[in-house]
Length: 157
Length: 406
Image 1 (cartoon, each protein chain N blue to C red):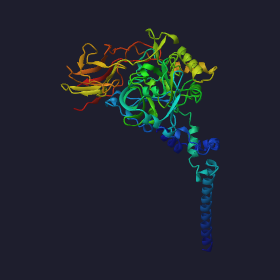
Image 2 (image 1 turned 90 degrees about the vertical axis):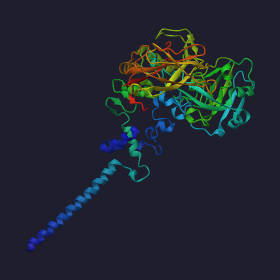
Image 3 (image 1 turned 135 degrees about the vertical axis):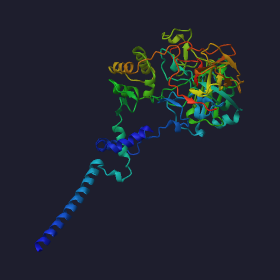
Image 4 (image 1 turned 180 degrees about the horizontal axis):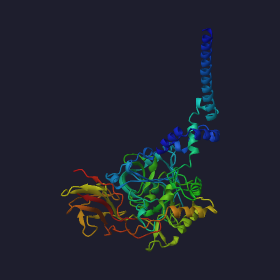
């Protein structure tokens, strides 16, 4: 009987120890995660949101469904060359709105260099122009196009 | 706004990425720095624009209306297009604002405060049509370079200010004056302080017209920052780029003003007609002055379906640059027959005019209602694109809406 009681005590003690160990290891792992995740422990201070800001920067060049999210440009050969050279001064929207052949893009680049402080693109110029004429080709419109993408609705009265 | 939910999503889903990001970049972020993505980027709120306005460009801001947003007789701010060439300046204290009148042909260089303008000169209010020279550019083939405006780069707001002529005369105009050129305090996209984003102007004859204003109110209120606060030049009927925003200096020139976007091919068309795609030398390009005759059907919105036997009421506006619209017609059979409809007189010279019509359709089917205005010189809008030009200006082809009778 006394042996049984002693055994029971030991079990309980072991159980307590196990719980304690579990508790401390949990605390330790949380602290460790904090330390890794937020080394300056700034999460408790005023710089709390920095972690979110840095996330934006980390994902700045994220691509989803073949589109470079930050600029809306199509993912293809030369994408980052275009992003890095053509979206500093103006929006990528100005690039994607325009449909030109290689000759006219080269003229446009020359104009930007002469009047808009665009730098010498060197070998990148060919990469950029190839990207543009391949991914944003001109569409023949003729002298007047059909009305398209009509959003039909019932006119009241 | 999409950007924000995207940030939230990635924060929740990608814990390891977050740890990596923090270790790599955490120390590089300066206190108090707010990345661009987290500044409020909603231009609709920022500029108080209707949610149906279309953003063509966000650096610089270029936003256009759709036809149905322009239904008001006097265009409200919420439907007014935005065309910026450079960076929008910071809102300045009106007490710090100064206007300088200078140039080769000013008798004596003079400066005016806003209070000077308001107290020394008589105030005038005009409703003035301002249309971007490139409105309609998206239709040209081969395509023309620049913002691809469809039909919404036009508005007709009410502007209050003083006559430019009164101010120029107060400073004194020499007899050799040819042109005025404006200067403003917006900054160049490249950030280069030695460059002006745009500095255009007009001949003295236009500058001295009664309706050419140095405006400080739009629709009875201070001009919104994005439309040129505190003072904007307004020259109705000419390419809207003549109506410089954020003005702080006007030069009376003894030659055609040679500021940014006055020279080369900017706001110019071939002096003689050219074939589509033809190359034109700079010296063969002529400055655009008055805008051509044009009209818009602002009601109903395109895509209306109506029951057979019901009439359709349409309405809209027409304008003709320096001239007046003398005749308004519509066609429901692609120009085979035209029906004349009433066109109102403008509220003042250079304001757009309103038309309306009640249309009956002969049978069920798909129709397009085309509108055609004719000006006092008997020049009408073309149904096809007008003369191709390298920069895609002056597309005044007829506007049309789709209608289905069921």
